[in-house]
Image (cartoon, rainbow, N blue to C red; front, side, top):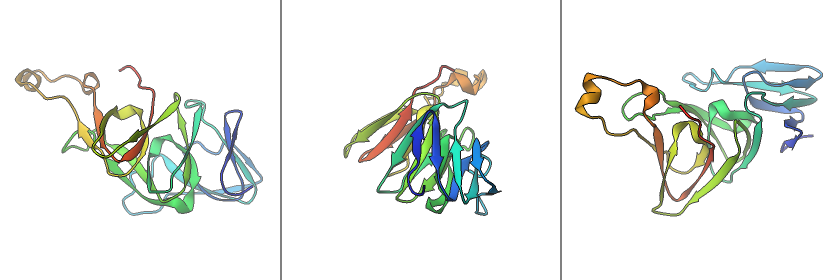
Length: 194
């Protein structure tokens, strides 16, 4: 079994090859597999992803994120690194951080860029596909973003008042979002209460 994964019974199954997988994966490996790191000098996705080389078969599943979504893309796919379950290792171009809070790396999201291929994402809820036409915008909560194509989003947090500077609130009380600009496709999962 090579190529696209088979998704059934909450598992993504892939055959022989080199795969980019999330931490704690694979759940089951038929035979032996070699686990390696993510390549690159500056790779912010290194702490949540690694590579696995197998000559047989792998079963991948996450108990904390049971919903699996197969994303296919003819263009460059930018996927949230922590939500990647499996993707072809050769499809990874680079990993980087996307700033949610403008001009700050605090709460930045690690993103992995994949070239013209597919990825299986593991999420806590179902995923929806949102197609934006030219000139349209969409604001998506930072924790709900799964992946996108096209231009990078810009971070958004509500405007701070003088009182916020004197009596700072905790970061969890501020709704952080990413603003996407069309034309592009955005995949999002359900948002969690803070």
